[in-house]
Length: 226
Image 1 (cartoon, rainbow, N blue to C red):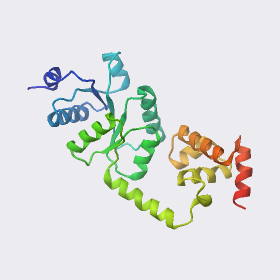
Image 2: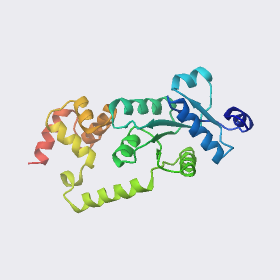
Image 3: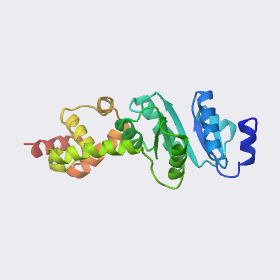
Image 4: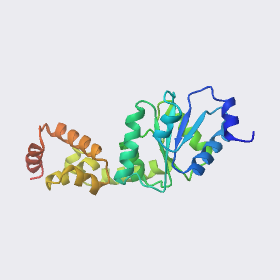
């Protein structure tokens, strides 16, 4: 076959995997690599969500790969972009592909609703398996990230747990910011989180403390930490 379109015409029987990347060369290279690994894949490579809608308003998508390249999902604008795609596609799995394999980047992607995180350091075979896992309802993270997280969990378990284990490590960081009276936007910026994620953490904190508002949270935290 001479081009990507001819290959796609033969195997365009299943719902497509959509690749979203503003860089045309990068997305076409990834599409071709995935097809060479598994010719039965049906892949649609576009520059944006708007381009996908313009080309096919009723496309039945099976998975979405959003390519970040060197961009970091801990940057607020990038996390907002990923969160928007997760919201737009609903139950369809959105998978982040990025250069970094930093556990903090991976956790932030999952917090934004991504169903997988593929670092560009992995082989095409691993990327294809990650897509298959997400389409089957699973969540993919690279093994080295899981090992790094295990070390963090062990360190936390062997040390002083925040507020006697009432809160997760991330919730404890939000708790500390709430005690200082910081606004959600400031908390999101300082902790490299989506503002919507901060709100979720605050709701969880309020539920655990049986508080109805931020003032009551601060009051109960003062008693707990006295």
